[in-house]
Length: 111
Image (cartoon, rainbow, N blue to C red):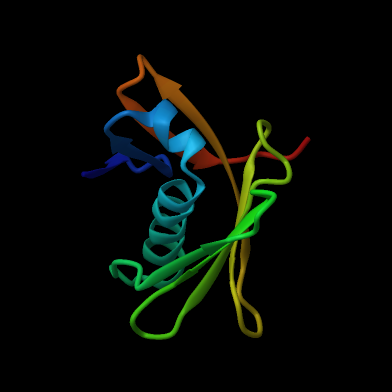
């Protein structure tokens, strides 16, 4: 289940979020779906997910051939998402777990 928090750009996934933190495929799928919805106005479920062995990034492919890369290199500070192709925006997201129940993504503000 996905919830948008009061139009402030936050995105909440209910479920065992700390487990999501350890499961890069599920975590990157959720981040990529959020990116797709907010940046490209598409609501699709991933077709496939591939993650690097070292867990630094994942590639999430969707049925319309959109490919969203999710990078974990700046964790725990923030996540990075970007669709492949020209002029696709790069987005950075903060994330937090609340009571081991939900994961919240919100826009990262650089200093």
